[in-house]
Length: 121
Image (tube, rainbow, N blue to C red; front, side, top):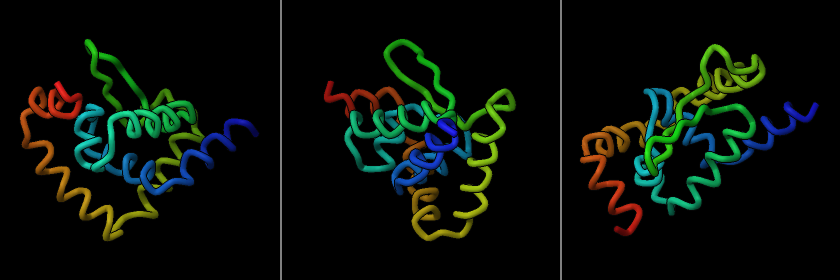
């Protein structure tokens, strides 16, 4: 029951749903997600931490940067099914379509410059 509650709580936030949908195309650095969302890195990191704890995203660290992706085949069935439900449910959503368009622009930005700017360095 605890796992189910963690998943449903994690999905009960629009920003977290948008982040899940942004990961459809593959792994993303927190800097890119922050740029896409227009939120502070700390806020994005907190949201991604909640998704990670619920098993809805995978994470890896490279140097000082964190990268997130949708869960793989080794993830619990409930988490994979929850992500699939989100993806099916939000197909055609205007906000998600706008995010996808914006993400293309974010992906065209130089990652090192983007991360420096996001971190205030």
